[in-house]
Length: 238
Image (tube, rainbow, N blue to C red; front, side, top):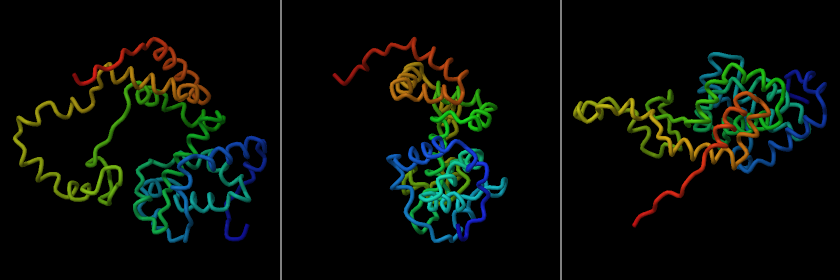
């Protein structure tokens, strides 16, 4: 493959059926057409990537491999093995791509495929994060704009994110201290109803079964908790 110097010997030695299954799973994901368009190899994504500064990782490499995986599905499988787990999912790469690619989104799809297929390398990679996985599955997770390292626009936070980030300290100083009492600790509290609903969603959507394939211990614990949840309908407006 001209222009590609990445070693794929390990992927070529893997079970061909598994390689092709992961590739097919990735390509038919509903978000794939939105996340990948083309690549001009500009490197903007890698320039803003925090993982690139700390590990042998580049979102540009991910997009290039996705682009060439049509004829070499082993390229995807090689990344699924270990490479993609260096990504923080901050999506800074998405904001700066002139082609509109979302490398972070592509990686999220690959991670999902790796978990769904229960690959041994995925199990080994995720094992140290069992407690974090359990916490996320049972209480959910959240992030606020001031936790994000980039000053660029992160779409899911809306068009005013940049302005808010630049003047965040001024806004905080303008709010009476007593108004902020208890805000920070309450922002991490999750009521029981919300946790129960989260477990039901994960159970009905097949998320728990998917996690079982990569982390049986966490999957079984969460499955047991979900089996005990019986939700009564929420009361609507009178």
